[in-house]
Image (cartoon, rainbow, N blue to C red):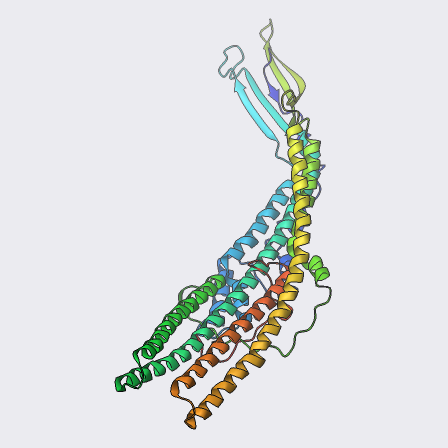
Length: 487
């Protein structure tokens, strides 16, 4: 009669755990992986970022951000720095790195053994209080033999999560910088349209008075009034666009409450006197692009996953159970005897139906998919770098054309028209037309200048990453706040 299985081989799980290597400290530190992220952000965009885990850290950041923006006219650099300190979506991305570190930490530790204990035949009259005590210690042999590969895969995923967080940071910085440019441009357009509206109001009023005297027919009166009404609609739309652009900037900076009481300049900074050529931009992009490095790690992770799948293709679960039997028997003389018998069991699934071919096929296709993603990313990186460089130089030439040629010409036309008006050579409506043309040219020049600064931000994103709606702001992308009334 079998009475009991007691844990005779107590050291068995410890023997299996002995093959586990020491856990790297990088997985267990409070802000695992964040130091590596921060070290890559500053060289790329010249800004610092933080990972706030405690309430005290969040309160300190809140005070710092409040001091940077409350009732102040902020520059593009300030907007980017505030976003890196205060955007909660970015903090969630940093937290994901910590989750990945915890996964790697967990893969570095042996699986806990499973112990089961049972008591049978409680109150058996012939044996006393119990008939049997059963106990088992169960450990997974396959877990121990595959731990090294699983840990390597987890470490690759950890490094990939860090690079993904770097890319998220660069993307937020580029989005914020471009949102600041868009907001300032929108308020600059409002300023030009307000001046144009004032000129149009004067022309419309003059047309009304001349019409009352009979000096201007109804067609010309209606023409002036229609232009004035159209300009009023454009001004209202420009004001709405300015409000929406500023709200987009506010969201990216993560501001709310009294912190939203900040201003942006009413004009972008002046164009630089020249822009230099950028040598080997494709090589720089291939060397620095974060998304390309993420794709490389993705391919590495799939290679490790493929090896792990191959190792467990036939036998996916292999467990060993150790214990002993303690048998209590009643002899003919009435004495109780105890017999201990060691026992070892091996449990595994027989691959009759699932031979593992489907899992291997999935692993092969996943690896092929990652290889193609990496190749496509490399092609896109080179193309984006060339396109960004071309846009950067072309937009600068266009902006300089408006600033140096078109705007001065319209200004000359306006000045000469004023002289002719003073000499009673031209009439008032011709003078107003010249003024409107000058304001229209100034508005086009402002838009061209905005395109250049956008292209400047895209250029840095093309080199470091975070483009197509996100990217960095380094190498010449810093903008000083323009002068004028704040908004």
